[in-house]
Each structure stands twice: as structure tokens, then as C-alpha cells.
Image 1: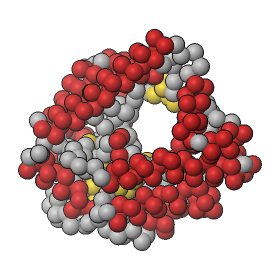
Image 2: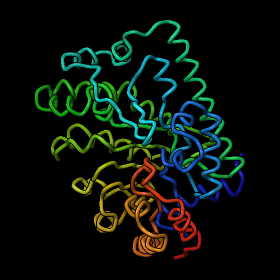
Image 3: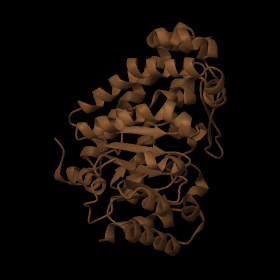
Length: 377
């Protein structure tokens, strides 16, 4: 189905996950910065899929990465607007996107949620969009269908025209249940309090969510065919930042371990995208065999993490501080240090999602990518 060049790009990352690579794969962690690097405004990009398609295509033609974490599919402004509002608030001048932390569940809801998570999703939806009318729902459905069509079309364009895979896909996103309550239902403040006051109720609700939906999504990812992406499962690790060691072991690690073990048992790969720092939990990942996971680090010192996790393929390390403020030569020297010291089992990428105009300079990213293409171990 896919070309040799496409398959070779996918193989680059699999070789890196096994520490068998002789070149360094380069994955783009560019999200909203590519809009500021284009001729379009943020509002034009997010509300016009044709313009977003031009932005991501021109971005590839300029920088020529081996794979992409985002193709303009991350933020759903038209859908949320059609529903009457929602989680995203766009600053049209800076491109900044704020996410509201408003709970759609209360602690007393945990018991009912645990009884029937699917039924409770309807209740949560009605709470989030209390003024939704039939005509709004129709508009929102149309917007979601358009977004789905865009994602399908842009993925096909990259796979067939540019011979480039996506690194991950939303259809294979599998999260520990605690992430859902932390990021959506109860919010950061809510779960932080609930772990102390309503510990068992929260745990029961997390288990119910995982049994009803999480495990099903994981098994579906194991059965996917004709993938136009690299990693079989994508897991964003975010909520660990509010957990101490005991809480991590109780609420988070069992399901994350199941994700990793299931990938290992089926010969699949999981892409672990870590926001914040995960150094204090590094030992939990020390027994994962090579070839099972790639861990993308945001704030951790990647050289220190290589010492702690000699078994783990690491991605990231090219800091937004350097890309936005240093000279091209300084960025090249950083890239050479990353590749030569981290060795096989390393994937070049920006440490953080490129989001704001000052996160990167075009000349710096061009210099880094040229350096990566010519590097050999």
C-alpha cells in the first residue's frame, strides 16, 4: 500500500526503538508554531481546513522531517464553537491556547459513574453544553465530520505525496483512566483533593472507565491494519505531575503498565509523550525491553535520563530556549551533542510542543534539520 520511502521512514523509528539505528530519525513536535511561520493568521488556520492543509504541507516542504506528531489536527475550535463554547480559548495575537479547568463531575458522582460509565458520559456532555439546541448539535456534527475528513485527507497526502508517516494518531490514543478525570471530568484541583477525600470512589471510577473503554481502545489498537503512522499506541503522560509515589502506584502505574505490557506481548510500539518531568518515576520504566517504547521528554535533562534509562529510546532534547534564542551554529552544536552522546536509541525532536512565535526561528530549525540528515554514527 505504501511506498518504499514511506516504509523506510517508519523503519527508522523502529530501528531507533531497538537501538539499531545508524542514522537519527527526526520527528516534528511543531504544533501552533507552524502557523506563525506561515502567512496565515491563527484564526484563519483553525477555522479553515484548506488553509491549515497549505500550512502543514509548506511546513514539510520547508523542513522535511521524517515523521510528524501533528498535522494541524490537535485543536477543535470549529467543533467546540458549534457546541456553544468549550474548553479552548484562542488568543488571536499570540496564538496561545488556554484550556479551562472546569469540572463536569462532582465527587458524589463517582459511585454512579462506576456503575455505568457510558451512561454517565451523556450526563457529563449535557453539563458541559447545557444550552445546546438541536440546530447547534447538527452544526457540531457537521464540524466533527469535516475535521475527521481533514485528518483522513492530510494523513493520506503525507503518506502518498510526501511518503511521510504520522508519528501517532488520535485513533490509537490510549490513556490511563486517571488522565481522563485529571484532564477533563474533575480537573487538576478536583482530583488532587479527591485522592485524599474520596480515594476509593475515585479509584473505582478509574477502574470502571478502564474496563469499559480503556482496555477496549488498547485492544483495537493492537488489531489495526495498514497504518499510516509509526507508533501503534500513543499515551500522553500528563497527570503524573500531581501524584506522589504511592499515588502513582495506586492510580496510574497499573494501567500504564498494562498498556506497555500489551504492546510488548503483541510486538507493538507505544509512544510515551511526557509533559513536565518524570525523573522521580524513572525506575518504573527500567525493565521495559528495547523495541517496545519511545519516550519523549519535555522538561527532564535528557542526558541524565539516558543514565537512568539505558533501555529506553528517548526523543526530544532540542530545547525551545535554544531554537528561539540561540544562533544557528549554537543549535547545530546542541544537535551534534545530542546525537553523539545519546547514540543509537535516540530520536531528534524539540523538547516541548512548538507553540508560540518565539519558540523557534526558521533559520535555526533549518540548520538543525540539515545537520540531522547528514549525521551518521
